[in-house]
Length: 436
Ligand code: CMP
Image 1 (cartoon, rainbow, N blue to C red):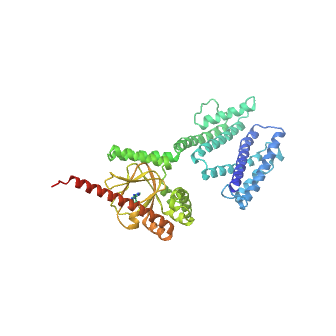
Image 2 (image 1 turned 135 degrees about the vertical axis):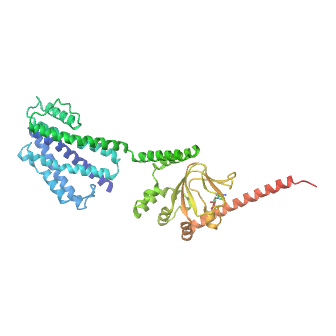
Image 3 (image 1 turned 90 degrees about the vertical axis):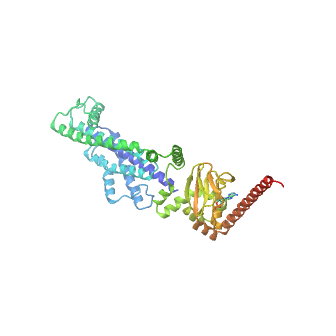
């Protein structure tokens, strides 16, 4: 329901923006190239009607009856501008200077553009690249209209007159200035000087901003490229071995493919806690739902655990930890394959994958790690600290029971394996012992 209203609001904003743009183009033209006929009168009445409806809609949004797509409600200042723009000036004729009041509707377009940028539905830099020619085009049009007004002697038809003027305007604004259309009297010279000064500003703006807009059209990629360049420079400067350099690059490539290079924790840290919890839950819901022992857990539990789990990435052949180390956290596998291996890495005891967990034995029994864990592929893990782990065990008996059962099974397996290994060793020792 809310999204449908928002879509309708957006549609209305687009209609009003188009109407405001049409008047911003048409009205200055009517003043310098007078037109007659009922068609213009109808256009005027249509604009008045649309702008009046818009006043009503903006008022409703301000009262909070309708959702405020434009974010901030219309204040008294905006209301005055809206009313002036909607006045039925056509009762005085189809092309009077009073018609210029319609241009007061243009801030509405600027406001709409700002909201589009803030809403983030589209890339802000791409939008800026669209809005910039819009405003520049409108300014060029007005300047050309001013030029026509000052140069009484026009071409044979209105189109040529306008085209001539816009040609002069573009050559002047872009600082090209061919000089084939020149001012003929002082007022035209004065006007030309002002346009030249504006032209220098526009030129500077274009050079300064468009280049950076183009460079930032994909901010995530720009950030990623910068990070890679800094990293490469650092690795070269510190003579990091080539093999390690490649692994580091692979890691960043993986991060780019999986998360567009963004660090989840960094972004979450910038959000207020209530929003952070929701985003955290959304991001980790997937893994929490995949871990069998969390199935059916309460919303409250999932909230708490989502907040405390920290994401980690491991590249192939990385060790998450080594056998014998003290254990301070356990891990959940969101994605990837890992092996439970002996301290020297030679024997593989078991293979773990999506939804599995490990590292719980050291926490439960308060002893060093019973085995090493090695990543086989790129792995996305979530780490849970000891304190939270203990709270989970205390507050959620079902989960504690599940972890306890898995731990027992694993320990039994390990003991059986150790016994088998010892038996093999003693058998071979007996076989090798000299007989008397
Ligand atoms: P921990 O002893 O803390 O560190 C090594 C981890 O490997 C251990 O916890 C278990 O989570 C896991 N592990 C040990 N033995 C096995 C096994 N046989 N199968 C699966 N996982 C195991």
